Image (cartoon, rainbow, N blue to C red):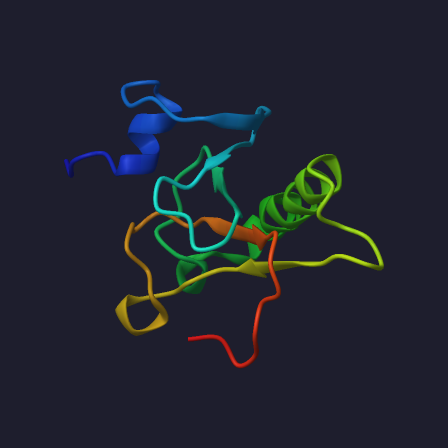
Length: 117
């Protein structure tokens, strides 16, 4: 049996987090190393290592993560015509993945350039 990921430990309340939203399928909290003034992670409670390993049966959960990020952006006042936000999902080492547990980054609060990285 492998060690629980950082995010599994946050879900289990073994590690504290600044939680902004939680429901039966996911938990969302402020990133401890923010890359923008607003940087929220939306994490499914059921571990999936990365989006590249998600199955067809995970479609509803993946959609829920994106809609949760949208709702948080609205709640935090970073959505709207005069504002904006970015949703990022990293996959694998070259994609910037640092925790092997699927998660959605919600970034906002400043102008986000393109291309990223």
